[in-house]
Amino acid sequence: MKNYTALTVPNMAAINKAKKTRTAVSLFAGCGGSSTGHKLAGFRVAYANEFVEAARDTYAQNHPGTFIDGRDIRTVSPTSILKVLGMKKGELDLLDGSPPCSAFSTAGKRDSGWGQSKSYSDDKTQVVDDLFFEYVRILKGLKPKMFIAENVEGLVQGVAKGYFLEILKALKDAGYNVRAQVLDASLLGVPQARRRLIIVGTRNDLKTSPTFPQPRRRPLTVAECLPEITHIKSKKNGILTYLSSDRPSPTITASDGSTSETASFSCGGFCQTEGGPKTRRKYAIKELKVLFGLPEDFKLTGSFEQQWERIGRSVPPLLMYAVSREAMETLNALGESA
Image (cartoon, rainbow, N blue to C red):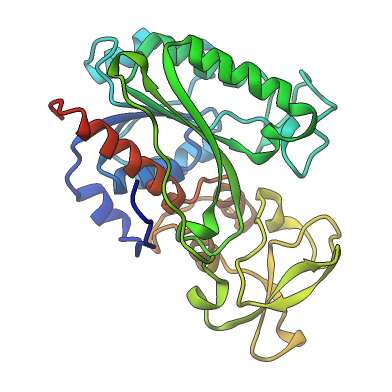
């Protein structure tokens, strides 16, 4: 494990062109935030599965070398993935995935709506609460050397803990040494207090343990990355207000792009510049990219709200880079051919 130093994000052309030494597969890939992080760490993302068409469109714009499968994950067989990869079971280096689990979001109720079909993204409606076990099914079929699974922090809180323990057991029973940790993106080079659950596993026969990145000593702030922003909508003592931008942005959600400034349930979408309160506004898309650590030239499709949703659902690339780099070092330490 190494101390983590913030990385300046290259543009997508440079990221795609850089040498890749190992191969990864991404499930529930979204617009490609995780894939960007894995590429930064040296992985070639050869296959991605994403159910939402608009997210696939954005993914394709930024990751032209990846085979994109738009099928519902429930209909995808590990054999079909291996065929695309030209690999045998056990040869893949890394399986990545962010199974949707909205019932356990810290912004949600976590104890209602289980098993119900719900609107997930754009016009897609789907039951999402069993998808982690679809991830486990694919994991068993591919038997990669390592896996990284990302999810909401709410999965380890309140009534969700029992479900989290079921997931951990399923991952361990699949033949992996498993560790889980909640990481804060603001301590890994992203100016946003975005806390995500990261689960990492190494295959038992490799006889090695997963490691996690060492965070920065202090969070990265909005002011450091967007100096023109002087104040950000935040909460103080439970009350929505505007605070100095010398702090990370609150978590920005997919729905913040369409909420009003006075929305009582959200504070991640508005800012103020040097002109005072009269300049309060929603972040521009180019600023939102900065707050997620996305490359400046990361391409987005659709309306303002759709672009915001794509970013709001994404995994900050630098967060995943920090985790993926640990995985790369673990794999390289095994002394196997890349």
